[in-house]
Amino acid sequence: KPATKKPAAKKPAAKKPATKKPAAKKSADKK
Image 1 (tube, rainbow, N blue to C red):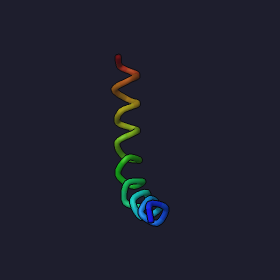
Image 2 (cartoon, rainbow, N blue to C red):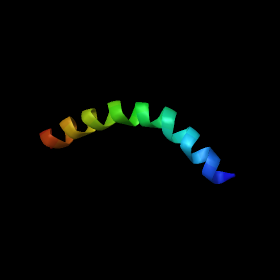
Image 3 (spheres, rainbow, N blue to C red):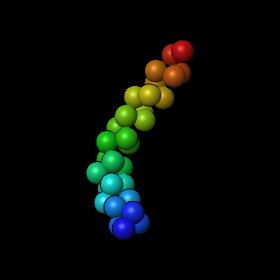
Image 4 (tube, rainbow, N blue to C red):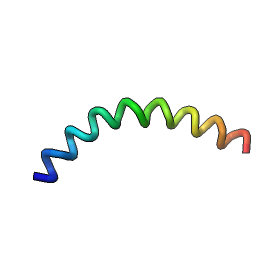
């Protein structure tokens, strides 16, 4: 059951983190 929940969670989550990562890297470069 958890195996089926992970792929589903990765699809929606994959889109959001992708946009947050670039922003996090920019702030990290400034620090």
